[in-house]
Length: 248
Image 1: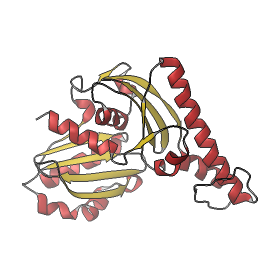
Image 2: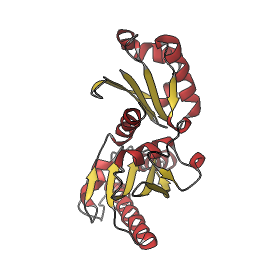
Image 3: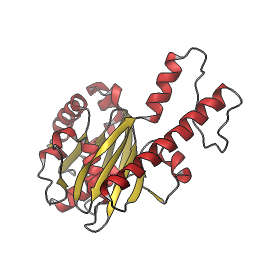
């Protein structure tokens, strides 16, 4: 059995897969709460998998958090954890930029989608909104824009008269009150940002792409983008499973 983890700035996803790569257990933790005590409480179920797990693979953009989790797994489960940047990934993906400057989650997303034939733009709605460009098996680079929820929460924190707001799919651009105006600004504003960046990528590379949305609020925006959008909420985890499968 395999333990796979995606450590993001907001959430940590821990999954256990059997030898056939079928998901057996999944839990989501809060990144800012990660301590040994918190892990002892939330991951107590892992006792039932002890001696069954023989490999742990992670992608992490929070080094201190990964360090705590790695130590916990080594102590409790007696298995070694590996972060994907510690692996030679050339067999999967040719990274045409400085690998140290690309988040492990973005590398895992790219490996998840590549098929050796198609070109992809992966848009990940996380703490940041990221765009990654993959041409066949080559990672060309990407764009990092402010995350939707991060921007919204910053506005709410800094503007005294703006109440807590949950974003929603809307059809009209003109807001009749503060909540509607903010929703419109974020909803249509991010749609404009997404469509313009995708357009700029097309113009610069002169290529056609499949556009894949993943993460956070991806489901909210995908139906209003003016082109076909593929949707996969488990892209990062799927990439890690693919890596484990092909490195055995």
